Length: 339
Image (cartoon, rainbow, N blue to C red; front, side):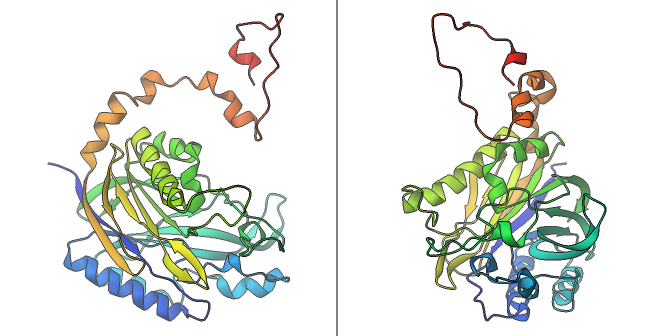
């Protein structure tokens, strides 16, 4: 029997700064109801789906930003979404800002803030949580920028790694599921860690501006979408997995988000793509048996990976320039000399 699950990327149009959680949740519920009429078993919502992308707004006192964060999940505001999922029997992925009272690496109990996503099954149970690892942007107000990107101010680096869970979703008894958030999609290491756990379906949400606001060099408008899709398609292909990548889109607080949510198969092909800047549902039937070809041939990790030659990846952070060639430079260096 083929292992097929029908999935949906539930793209959201803009959420303005003044919009309440209730506004966001009601819009997501309408998308979930629409998904049910199409036979969808898993709905993927964007990063920070309950609020505007608030890291573009500066708070000198970080505590003043706590109103953007969820203190519990489900909360009073999000409970209707969980209730609808139970009623319809639909699983969902939700991205939000999480505020938790937890011990840190020093053992101190304190308030901690993360950019988080959860996977909820059709019974309304949270089966997996992920916290964003690759935080872009900056930590302090930058007067040179037209739009701030303060993720490094408001969030800590995720401390849960890149977990994969095998969980029953829809009509299938078990799917190997993993999650990413936004900038994670651009890092091949993140995809490979998921791939090494046999992931079959990666869900990710993002909020990406149409322009590179850092102004460190020219990046053409159309290349923003191309680079996003390129990262997701390559990650799915190189790890033989499906991927559902869901965006926010449109002009939010005066900042344009490019949308272009996609569903990608293990061959790296785009199966469905959003074409609007509004709330939009795109769907695809994912035959998980398609993952088998890649992971048993060209990407059969157990046969072809050579981790002893990759040590630089985990031992080094920034780029290190190579030695300058001279006639005395050895033409062969051992792998142990490369780290």
